[in-house]
Length: 299
Ligand code: CP
Image 1 (cartoon, protein in one colour):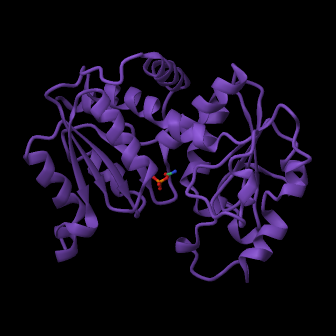
Image 2 (cartoon, rainbow, N blue to C red; image 1 turned 180 degrees about the vertical axis):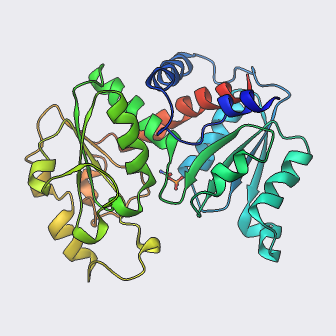
Image 3 (cartoon, helix red, strand yellow; image 1 turned 90 degrees about the vertical axis):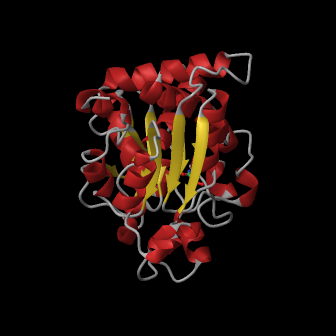
């Protein structure tokens, strides 16, 4: 595959993806969701490696389901049981799999910038499954898909993204994509969890709840060097989506969360499967969205 095609078929982020391409992926996801058969082996004979250098449940498994539904051969790499533990670099790991003949790689990484660099050095399409707090494009695509299914249109909707914005690649990918699609995005975050480099309006939690979409974020405790909050209870009290707060959300509005969830921290336990919640629908929609992304990389 030549360099230009590899670049076109890779999905490193949504920041630089034209609005038309985002819309095409959402439409193709709708096509895949509508298919009556679970298996459509259009990628028979293609080998895809899922290379996760950071933990995952939803992203890894929904990519695997998507790949299998399209008939691809799936290789699962987990850093925890690989030669990374002997000191092998990310680059050498990816080159190793490339040299064995994979046709595309799904990759999740902790450090920012490594994926962009890798993409210039390997000759197969790479799909970003989350890199540091930079981007998580397939999560944002499935979020957009979920919102579009709900409201029919994306343009003109107001979305509030609430919580640990500083550490959130989901917030960044959504912000960049949603703006291209004509949506109004606001953030709500404690001072120690705000992302000062992003030019976005911050609102209070009360104001944030006056939105079409209330998107809660996980408090990423593993990425906090010093606790911003003394206790989970303190966070819940000031920024959590509590039952009392949820009562003020408009009838037509929906609640989203990329998960995993800290129940009773950023969202009350009983709200996770509340009629307004679309959290498990988001996960379900992730399969069709990832089918569209993998197809774009390989078909
Ligand atoms: N939403 C998401 O990326 O979940 P995982 O970390 O489980 O993949």
